Image (cartoon, rainbow, N blue to C red):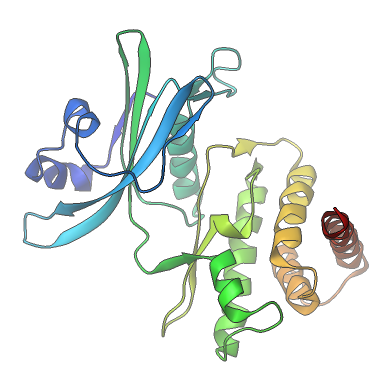
Length: 264
């Protein structure tokens, strides 16, 4: 993947004089969090506010990296920029209707022997990570919005089911990677951290691995919510023997893992 620029963002980037790789690469902005130095290079993200030609503003995240590569099916040996993998996966989810980040810009270049890449996405305004919300609500309680609670479980289950129906595995389906917008209306969700997402020809294996990670992180004490999630995921109106087997397998594995971590 060499370059991607969303058509409806071209004028905004040009208005901010940020419509070139060099302008974005040399933009002097603070890191949103300290850069990550690994894989023989570095990678970091910054938040920036773009001015709109009509006088408004919009927040974006600009991620820059150098010599920070990951293996992919296209480049299993030499690897490619992890942001390139992430952008490709964002576009894949956009195509199949799984809620994710809004892609704006991606480009990579070779500069003095170094492989540099930039990824820009729209800020998730009003969203919070699910793990943060769960901490706010407590380990055994949810907010008073019972209808919203059921809708949130349904949104998560349908999005993850759609991901697996297209034979994709997230490979990091923790609650911190499920962002939630919770306001007066129906909750909305968004899947992030897609650089590890890969195709998996075995849909059942993808399901079990992702759901195990999610159930373990979601909390083994929310058994009713787990069951509701699984039934929505499977599209079943009642607890069938097959659904019961899957739920028992995932729940017991997650419970054993948490017990092991507690002992250590």
